[in-house]
Length: 434
Image 1 (cartoon, rainbow, N blue to C red):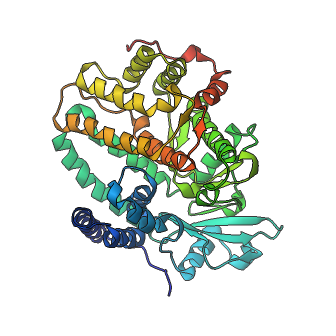
Image 2: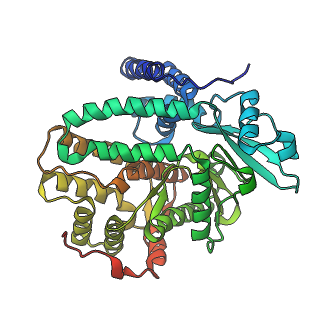
């Protein structure tokens, strides 16, 4: 039985399918004891849609707290297929895409090329191949029609943007938030952009022997085809039974990767789902997929450094000032809620050594509801979120969920002290908001 599907590209058709899966999923959560059928239906529809719809399903499959605990196992099992075995495009359509993009036949471009993908995800699918010089490579090819599907989803999102603008304070700048989201997802359609980001992260982590990022093969890469060295390693599920010391070294490597990018480099990879990590010996981790990267620039970057330093010093008042400065709050209930929510997310530093748990991540997801309540109440203290922070929750929820699965106690503060030791803090903004 084949799992090949064309990507549906019609805006109204995609919207109807999403509305349908939402209604059926909601009913499954309300009236079912295990939610299995609703979860399987959600996986089927979101997988066939691919694009942004599949990304939502991927997050729901591994982020703790997205689905009620009673239905957690059913949804994790059903939606987990979106991480490893999503519906894929036919070899005929993929071959045509490769040859159109690279300007020659597959046989001329590659010495060997497997016709079955070993991974299929929301934007593209990945094949094993060999170059004529003997190098083993992974070739990621966009699903034909996925650009139209993404644009259809973004147009549907614009309708939601208009509705949200009527429900929350104007100061929240809903349009600005959606503009950032649109930009990031459109960038994911440009594999040339992804190649640039992949090489940037390679340079940033060049002196960390435990961080491995596959080298880009530029002569076999275009906007819709990305060829890299083939990465080898075990999956997250395969290392969960490793001894505690080994799992701890993996977590330490992953924390260095994320926060060196944020605090020293001023950008982060905002798509931390489990399929983007492979694990080797001695704490070595392979990091994959650099299509969704969020830059962080001053003044937000400076405020972020202040917050991290305050957390390392267990300076609650300094942390509050840094958080208020970064978000731009001016007191009131919203500032209290933002600081409380953010402070909770910094528990691994304030309370280091710290053991990340699924309940901790789920509680963070629940806590954000308090912020939403203030927005919908049109509280006067609500302010707009800096664009650089739009994807931060996606990073925190997803990344922390992965770390929770590894289930070890780690001295996160010690890792960050080493990262920040050589950083010149002279460019940080003052501790009091301007």
